Image (cartoon, rainbow, N blue to C red; front, side, top):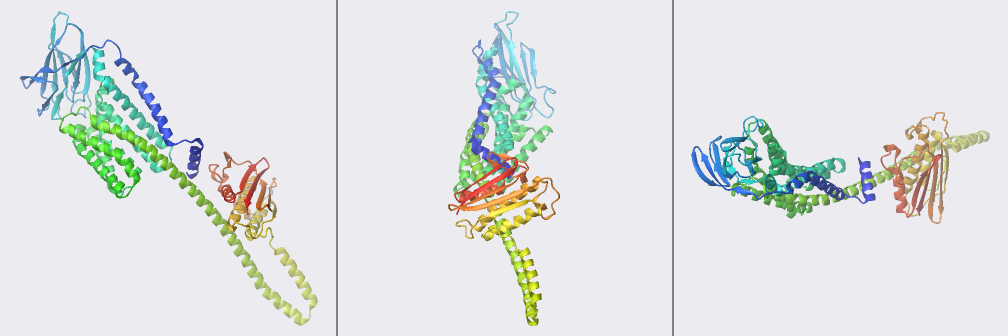
Amino acid sequence: MREKLWHVLDGLRAQRWSPGHAIAIVIVLLLAIAFFLTLPYRLRSLAGGAMTVRHVTEATAVVNGRPQTITLPHTFRDLPPGTPISLTFSVDTRASFSLLVKTVYAPTEVAFNGETISAYGTKGTYPSFLDDPPTTVRIFNFRPDANGMRTGTITVTYEFPHDRAKLPVTPFAISNTAGLFRYEFGGLMFSFFVEIFLVLMGLALVLLSFSIYDIEKSRAMLLFLGLFFLAVGVWNIGENDFSVFALQNPALLYMMAFTGLFFVIAPLYGFALNAVTFRWQRLLTAVFYLEVLLPTAALVLQLAGLVMMMQSLFLFHVLHPAALVLLVVALVYEAVHEKNVRARWVLVPVAALLLSAVLEVMNYYVFHRFEFAMLFLGGAYVFLLLMLGLTGVILRKDARLKQDYERQAHERELLELRLAAEKERHDMMLAEERRLSAIRHDLKHHVSLFSELVRQGNIERMKAYLAGLTKTIASKRPARYAENLAVNAIAAHYAALAEAQGIAVTIDLVVPEHAGRLTDAELTSVFGNLLENAIESCARSNGRTLADASKPAPHEVRHPFLELKARVLDGRLVIVLDNTCAAPPAKDGDRFLSAKRGSRAPGLGLSSIAAIAAAHSGRATFDCDERAFHSSVILEL
């Protein structure tokens, strides 16, 4: 995962690309898609021949056999379920005309001159899990009367719904089809265009969260923002009269409207919990799960036909504003008391959404305008615009923080490599000390023997013993590669490993005991990484690994070699290493990738060498041809 992030972040830096750019591109594409999806309806609404729309504002209502004249719009209240309500009005029949009728959760029948021409909402024409038929919008076309009558009578009969305490009746609209379409749906088509965009945008953000970002909280923020877009868009489409007219699937739109409304707060909480670290994290998390479980339960109860979503709506009229109030209070606390910058950012759009929710509840219960939740949807649009910009800012900062974190992790790995090399040097020095201790221990025995031979006057035997001892000491003398003890220890260690592998080793080092500003740890890291990589490359050329160095080398066809030289020139330490390379390592740009990591990440050893060279005003270059891998390092002393 770390290597993948480095690769992605390097690509972003190289291309000057950011999450904000991706979101902007997605928005433009989705706006274009949404525009072309709604274009046919727009062209239809702009078609010529539209007549002036006349509204029927007075009608004779008959309820329980009692006629009365009413003014539309009118709301019938508190009637027994199934009570028939007939509205009758006169129309001019000398020319063709069209009539627009909207039902609100009530079975509806339309009759002309006493003859039924349409019936909606009879049992069996809508899903059985609904007590009342969903809202729909219908247009009925009438031709001139064949008998030459100047007027006719239209009767629209409703049945009072089972799940509502009121039945609103809007004015009937009369015109030709083009006129009704333009008047009734012309303004709603723009809303429909926006709703399609919201749904597409939500889907795009959800997919984007899974396909681009590996930063957990940023992924979650994108996911929940996308789900919020989806919830608002689905809710809007379900509420829009144009959707009802265009899709002619009232039951589906009913489920969409209530499902979107019920689930709209949960993704908002999910976004906030990932964008801000709250002091009240557990409480807000509990509310988040409540906002997921209760809508789920309401949906299950609706599908089971036990409790209608219209009845569950009253619970969410309390739950949603209360959850928004709690979230705003938590954000205010974090912004003011904890000085949380992100809480200040998130507070403004959430407060705007809360204000619109409170106004919508007042509008519903005080002014009884509930056909279309325009106030809350308006607040949701403002919230979405603000949150979209805010998300881009947060994601950009998160990407930079992640980049810094990965860089620091990389530097920690380099430090661990240096520490490991230092430990290895220390272990070798301890081994050398133990060897010297053994020699000192043996020396006592040699001295005792010499004393006895002197006492005996046995000079010939003493000479023979000294000759054998001198030969033994010469054969055990460790190779001396450099004046610098650290470099000498590393060179001796890896030379022994290489020779055990059957690698032809040539080491010629001129490294002073005191190497200026270069520390022993840095010298150990540079020479250790160079030699370790070289032996690993030679071993791979014979199908072996560095771990096999202690095992006898089999007879090989290849003849791997390692040649290391170092000199001090003009105040700089110049190191050159050539070694066998079976095949050139994979590269990412100008950097070689580690063969140990599946060629997915830059080699840590080479990165460490390059970092040390850069820190000492030098450079490190690496190249590979068909025969060998070539390394050169220059370090200022």
